[in-house]
Every structure is written in C-alpha cells, then in structure tokens.
Length: 76
Image (cartoon, rainbow, N blue to C red; front, side):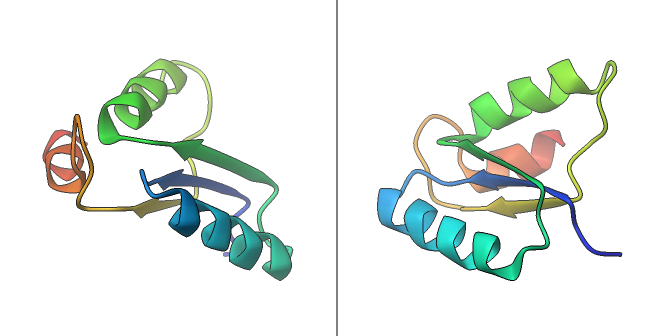
C-alpha cells in the first residue's frame, strides 16, 4: 500500500523543509500536514477520528517542546 496521507510532527524548520522536498519528490503523498509538537498533532487526530480517516503514515520527531514524541506515542 502506498501512503496517500502523511503527518509530519517536528519542530525543526530545516527538517520540515527537507522532509517536504523528499516526500513531494516521490509523488506518492496526496495530503501532507505538519505539526510542530505532539500536542497539536494529537488534538488534530482526536478531532479527525470522529469522521475523517487516519493518516497512512506519521513521521515523528522524538525531541520536541510542549509534548515530545515519546509522550505522543504513550497517548496514541
């Protein structure tokens, strides 16, 4: 299965930019959403769980402010 939707959770602007370039160059992702911390991403996933489909792929940074990747994984 080829991913068509992706969520990137990262607070580093350079990593975000490079990830965007790499992902878009594959042409395999239709929807690309970015969150700067786990808390924002978790809120989005909870909101969309009521009606929208979950993303096919989540790229997660482990070291972030507010809610890091480890805390995000504990709550998902």
